[in-house]
Image (cartoon, rainbow, N blue to C red):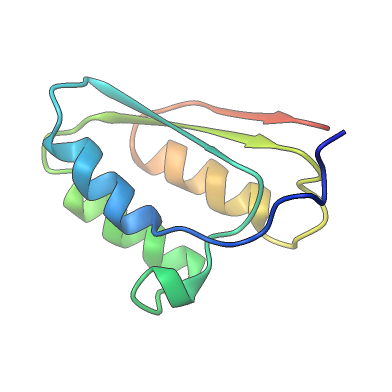
Length: 96
């Protein structure tokens, strides 16, 4: 099992900026946890969802898949589910 062997963070904002410029009609975000505000312009998860949704001017579907021990961090499911719902996508949680 790979759980616990990875760490770090990435910019969800930068990833979506790139994805929104692509020709794709739909985007799938796969994540194991909450976004780190330090890598996303200091935005809290709720403000990050709003920022991504506003940036989605092309109306691309955003689907969210949470993997691993998603109950470990309070709010993980809420963030991913809110992101998908606000952008016309679906949400799926897979336990690891």
